[in-house]
Length: 391
Ligand code: FAD
Image 1 (cartoon, rainbow, N blue to C red):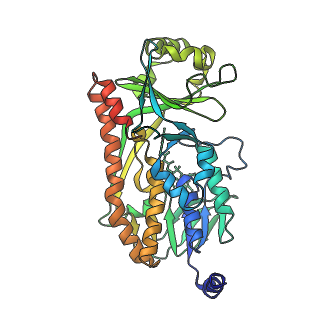
Image 2: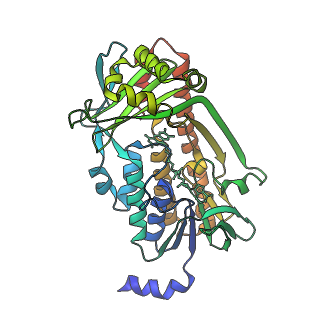
Image 3: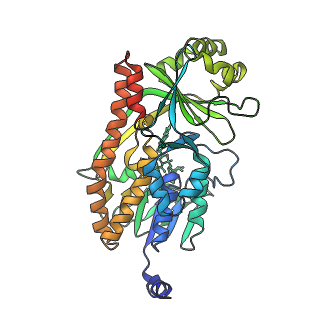
């Protein structure tokens, strides 16, 4: 066929794209680049999570919305992911008396999906793996790279250093990106990073009599002015509850009894559902995790490198748009590749031009809602409606 002929005749010159980071955005991005016919090499510092017993990530589940779905659709993954997602048609607000009131999302029929992060990542890696022009390299941690030559140094599985070369490095290595370090050494690179005073902790609500302990098709919220808990459903009929609270408040809770007292005061209806003993233990299983907001510009360095996903724009999770924006990044650069005929230097410049303002807007909106939540302590319903309109 014509396409295979073109493929063969150009294969000797096929550009090599190194995707650093095989998380959500890196693995999706690999599919996009592979589909275009580039030679793609993914380098991920973790082991292959498809074989791992325990998978660590930034959250157990997350909300997939329209932006993210559009990107998945483009690589033929939308149906597969949506079929394993749980629609959330509304928020369910829990007050301190245990009263629940639903607030729908947008118009009738509109919903967002609760998806399992580990499964989503596994499916995307599996999809990337189906392309013959893609290699997945696990246990490869980027140590450094040279903007002059494009040479990357990895620490390989055996602890040895490995030098590798690519035509383009795509930094998808998350909020604490190693790729981004070289950007910080360049003139006229803007960068800011802000930790918010809140941390988050995940707690599991098991099934009750074999079924979901609460109404499954909702994003449950316990708004409490300066802090809150939310819960998203999982396919195994558990809920993952996430408590967002200032670190200094987390630090005040030191014993199992104090956990129960705290929950009795603020989230009483959740105690029997999570279970007293589980609550006492799980609260201390892992320390509360920090949340950082990162903004930078430009997103590219010459024709050698581009940052995408959290590496370019980590946002606080109060808008539920971090991954969704990262997925949209992949779609946007793909469109620009079409427009500019894969001229990498031009594509990266245009990508920065169109994408920085949009990603910065999402970071601002997420941070704005977080600040407003703390400040307007007496208008919680209104506030949470407003904040949740954007999840
Ligand atoms: P990551 O998921 O962080 O992946 C980065 C990958 O790079 C990892 O696999 C890591 O191992 C690898 N890596 C790191 N360093 C190196 C290195 N030096 N060399 C090689 N590999 C490396 N977003 C939503 O859209 N909806 C939500 O509901 C939502 N909820 C969230 C809830 C919480 C509590 C948090 C913290 C975030 C939430 N997010 C949500 C945001 C979302 O988690 C991120 O935006 C998303 O994970 C970004 O994907 P990524 O691939 O860019 O980065």
